Amino acid sequence: MSTCEVSLRNVTAGYARRPVLRQLTASVPKSAITAVVGPNGSGKSTLLSVLAGVHPPTAGTIERSHPSRPCFVVQRSAVSDALPLTVRETVTMGRWAHRGAWRRLTAGDRDVVDASMERLGIGDLASRQLGELSGGQRQRALVAQGLAQEAGLILLDEPTTGLDVTARGSIATVLREVAADGVTVVHATHDLTAARESDHCVLLRDGRNVGEGRPREMLTDGALRQFWGLS
Image (cartoon, rainbow, N blue to C red; front, top):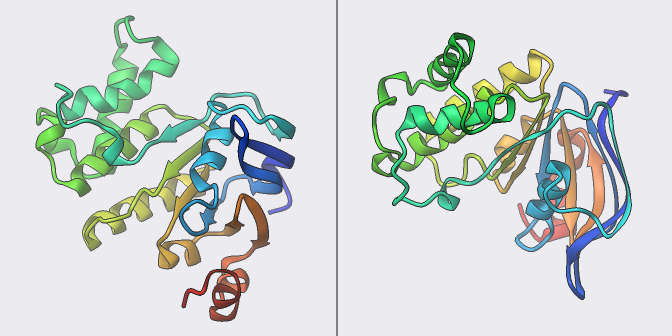
């Protein structure tokens, strides 16, 4: 994992008079799954936003292996129940990065949308309203939207938090498959089991990188007690 998808050096980012990331230096290995782990307020979501390019840093440098647009999969709670969107329409939005919001989809676009839904096991839910779905079904629809974008870098904010075992397993399997296909995956998570199954992890505390490397070496019981009082 010597080749990096993204390298950050001394990155500071946040809000007026309130930095969240503080001179953070970290790397994201290419074609691998990186878990960003830390307590609430440690800067996980801000780091994803910086990687996605939606929250520019106020200091530091970011080097990317290629300039293509990353995909950012938000938490299901960020999507209103009132939005009148079907599952198919939700996943189709992933093609907007290629076609725009108003251009007619091609047959190839529709094939990508169908394949993305089937990959997450929600093809039979295509006509259902997003607001009618369970939490696990909705999260799988959002991940399918991300797959439909066909990005080289997928960023996910707490993708399995609060989901049942079936939904967590489905999402984890798909992320492992896309990483094997050459896609780089970064997910912020509180789920230590999911983090330990990743290829790489970045440990955040107070907006700083307090360690990164292989999860089996970084997420030991001793390290968790030392940094966050976890076990």
